[in-house]
Amino acid sequence: MKPGQVAVVGASESERLGVMPDMSALQLNIDASVRALADAGLTADDVDGVASTGGFATEISHTLGLRPRWIDTTSVGGCSYFLHLRHAAAAIVAGMASTVLISHGESGRSRVGMEPLVFPASGAHGQFEAPYGVAGFASMFTVTALRFMKDKGITHEQLASVAVAQRKWAAGNPRALKRESLTVDDVLGSRLIAYPFHRDECCLVTDGGGALVVTSAERALDLDARPVYVLGSGESTEHTIVSQMADFSSSRAFRDSGAMAFAEAGLTPRDINHLMVYDAFAHVPLYGLEDLGFVEPGESGAFVEEGHTSPGGSLPMNTNGGGLSYTHTGMYGMFALQESIRQVRGEAAAQVPGVEVAFAQGVGGMFQNAGSVIFGRTA
Image (cartoon, rainbow, N blue to C red):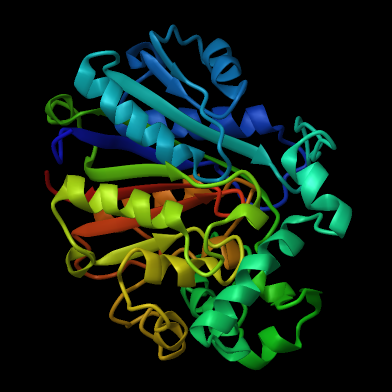
């Protein structure tokens, strides 16, 4: 696909984020979808493609009265919506769909309309990790975090600096769940969840939704919407369980998906004005900085600690506050995409001046899957 052939013309989150026991996961999907369509100046009748995780694509289609001729139910964790966007772009270029709705809604905190989270005993994790005490996400990600810190010389203070930098962005975002001041000492003094993660280095658990409307660049010219163009994208997968990761201190999936996106866009890290890296835990953005080529191996901790990703820094990153301070419904990727689009449009709560090109990186599972998207203000 050539850069700029496809544009996001509608982007919106659910009216509310946070704790909403009065709304089901489906209702959050529908709320966000209706808002995204309104943002695009379109209606359900204009949509002929739908993408969401698992059964939600069917439920959304039925609820909104859609008659899609293209459907994507890819579900590979939090980066699923990155892959949906990439697949939708390919489908539009191929003529398989003209306008695609990509939707997310998750009652991650209240669990309304959500299936129980289980790890089957018959699966790889159930057989080869759970018996040794590796259970929740925090304990799974410690495997990578500890190796990364040892290999790259990352200090606990530098890891805490990721949470501090993102809280600075959240302070300027009225929709962020956590906005109060945060210091490195506060982070290191917060409750230890699973070594080395303290509470403030672990993602929030919230309810919320988000949706995108995607169409061809040509059709976008006929709409009143503010298009944001897809310049490049990539996707990759590496392993089934974290203990099988080829290198605990570097994500092959990140490297591969990022390289695809840069190659397709014909760009390099030096061309990027704004960066979003999925931050389920504080170490993940450090992988993103290194594996995507924004800093050299071993430089990420100092880079964040010195303020380069904070407001006023050389590489604004996770400017909505991220999963650590903004929101994290369970599959956070949609919100990283939303913030990238807002920044390119120039309408973010904590707007970075002059954003022309934004890079968004998603992760699925414990570095199992990855998706990358580069957005541009112009095609």
